[in-house]
Image (cartoon, rainbow, N blue to C red; front, side):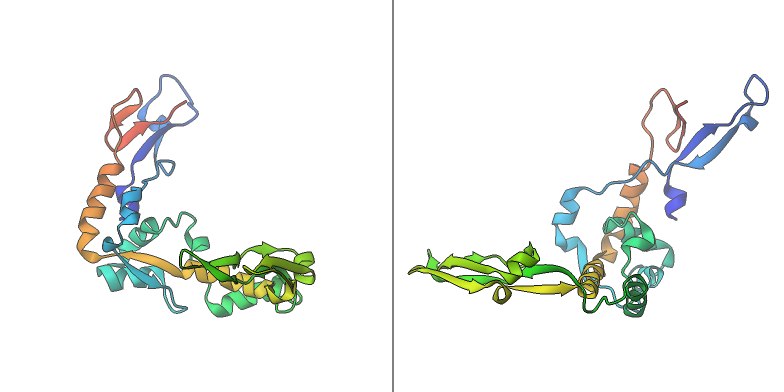
Length: 221
């Protein structure tokens, strides 16, 4: 369905004789013309249902579950900006484990990076806790083994770096990045037809020097 709605391009082959004949051309899908969703669509969550991909899930099965047709799998890809296909889809837990273990000798013990923990200063400003150290920041080993100083509103306090930061192993980092891919948005079924029609309209050509029809143009030579 996705490929049927995608426009074509007429590419000239190296001619065996002149003038060109119809046999000197090939018609192919124009994968360089990519349909882009309006940012306004993504900002309005009323159109979507948030979903966490499970190990047993497959793209075609999700399309069948929500749209009643496996061939609408491309809608899920487009609405989640998955442009690299299988690489943007999360690995199941077992496959992830095997992949990481094949690349590293000790992925469960080797530190990938260090990361800060949120630290509140102990006083408030305008009724809001003042944060002395933001959580989730990447820091180096020197920070972890050193000290961190902050003002608690009364005096300067110094604490060991390993109290305000933690090591993140290679496997923990890979698992976290993989889990980010699990969070997707499913376009609600009542908006499917409108989306597909908009996609078809967006995949047509405007008149130009290389225009043949709204679904076909000549390739630039």
